[in-house]
Image 1: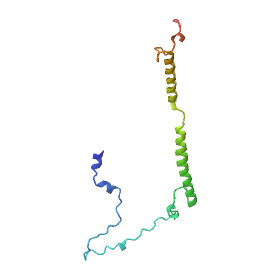
Image 2: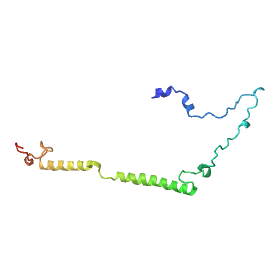
Image 3: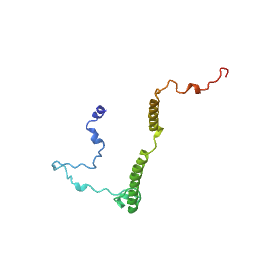
Image 4: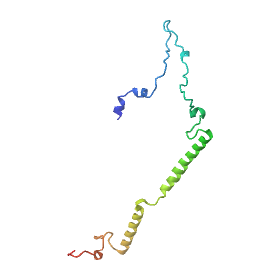
Length: 143
């Protein structure tokens, strides 16, 4: 992976950069070069004809919930409170205290109880037959 990235070399930092609109020379001017004054740069005018103003111009603290600044801030605070407090804290607590999934803890406790009971009765922990053969009803040879 690193060998693939190394072949790009120093071009990676240049990929994300946008070239500036104008280059100004810092070298000494010759008589034939002319003036390279920065006063030639003009601010870019607004080219939008539809008259729509960005929400960030109307409200610099815009959070994306509403065009009204007070309602926008209120909705942001409620949204983050619900997202963090309710979903993460209460949701995490709910998931932590869910019952035993697949009853794994119950099965272990039951197995330990059966082992202790069999040891007290002097029986082997595991018998060779899972079911008691005297309780199994087999079909007759004709069926």
